[in-house]
Length: 110
Image 1: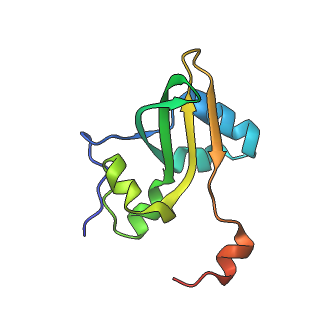
Image 2 (image 1 turned 90 degrees about the horizontal axis):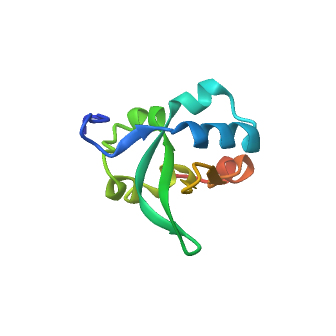
């Protein structure tokens, strides 16, 4: 399968508020953050309506020859999900770390 992050896809670079939050919260470098991609969709955080984001490494999708263009594509490959987050109506970003700890990766065989 040929990999493409299509222009008409739902896949985007991380919005600024998420980048800022993740850089501070998880001590991530700008180079790492620039490689991350996300799928954006409507959702809720508690009872508040928010813009939700499922975040993955675009380079890993390319290395695995995967086409990620929509939410259903990333849901079919949950092993690619690194973070999940949202931006609230005030424009503040929040994210949760979904990366597999290195110790588990070492013993996890595919």
